[in-house]
Image (cartoon, rainbow, N blue to C red; front, side, top):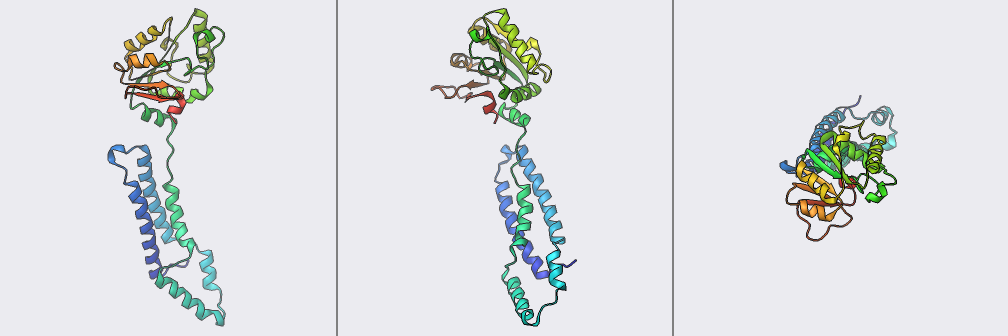
Length: 271
């Protein structure tokens, strides 16, 4: 194995340190109060990057250097090559492969860590542990009680988020229906989608009422940390009683209370 010369090693460490300083300054610009799992992951990545960089400096790639050492130089090129290398060392300019190896090690470990669906749910819900949620238009494809008299279909795109919420929160689903058959269709659709078997949700936490005011009463009695609904009037009425609400709407209506968030869909809110 061929080692770096002292001058070359010193220059490489200097260049590596400068590059690492930039990375660290970007990392520690995060305030402590905003420190989350991604920041902790970045700190861990920093430690691993330093370790690998240290290993890198100790064990430089050898094939090209061994070839250079053992290959007999021609008389015509020996002096020019030696003079050129001395100029490179004295000026601090080295082959790009040396810098790129250190850069690649750091960049690999400073890549943003994508939060898991469970982490996103906990972050977005601000540690809220009880959630109430309307079914129509949020969990189900249908948007009116009349449609539920014919069919009930769970939206496949919302399933992952729904299951994560049930793992972390005490979730209650509720909807206005026109008859008992609609209730059975909704429960069967949720069961077929695996909502009851893959999470902590049970059928007793799926509530039905005959009026919109009935849903409002359910929410007031349960006193959740979050309520999710499509009805603007219900959201407005509950704004002063519920800590947070998510209004499923493509636009944010004027005069919306500051504790009400808006999103086109439940799953997009957690993206």
